[in-house]
Image 1: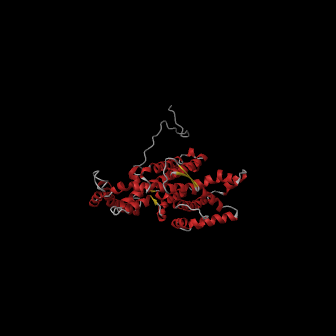
Image 2: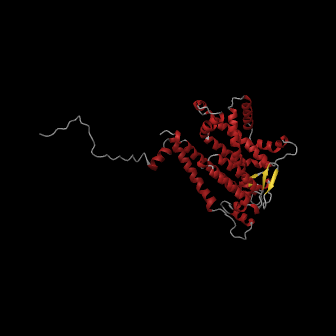
Image 3: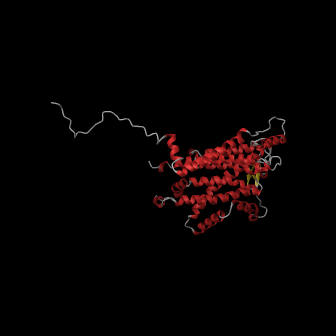
Length: 392
């Protein structure tokens, strides 16, 4: 008699069924194009318009910038006037302007024989900035390193150790007055030193604005709202013209130091509001939990509150950093030649004046490299610090 199979017994597969590949219309480059460029009628219109503009503008720009330009003197005995004549006859860009004026753009009026000093100062600042992005270096030693590098960079640029109104000359170095500083070292110095000093000041302002003590809260609110209510150029003029009036008789600071103080004051006010926004986003339970542990006010802020607030505020903080870096171009209004101001100074040469497009494009490329690097690092840092808060 044949054996019968019971329909009540569970069915068990004897072999693994291979997974079917997803439909070709949902993956791959074609699916990406359909989803991102041609998903709706207005996306189709925008895609067509942008593609048309790209076809019309990008090839002529490539031809102007890379195929038909004048890069520099064709022969060593060619004079600047001959190069300018070649630029006028060419259909492409005149990058010979950058070749002719790069020293002025990068170093301003700094003495040619002493270029190694601003180069070394920039390398120190850049090296410290890159080291500051490595998490294992974070700590008190990094703060000390910033102080040492800032003093070393100023000493290299100036040729003496500035100790208030006392200057200690460095043997073998000539003094270079701050009026001759310019170009990229000035831009990096104003922005990086300004941000390094403004950031801790902004944290104190943000904590003071949220303080329960009326006098401190009123002072911080008045300072923040007063400084944020005026443009930076006004603060620069105030620092250069009116700042000496508040000093005792016989005291005086040069224009570079006045501009640096103005940038620190202005940046600190904006950063304080960014930090305050991060503090307000912390749940009340975090404060109560810190109080229940018996922590003091500063222990609570240092160990629990501020780390969370600064992590939340990373995008806004970096946005302010980038804005402050670009705002250094306004120091030309008080007689200082930063990166953009040095390029404008090069354009003041009558024979090179018509080639302003190349000058501004080159300077904008340098600014883009710095600002884009800060932006990408902020995205990396934000992803890294948000690992513990991601949804799995």
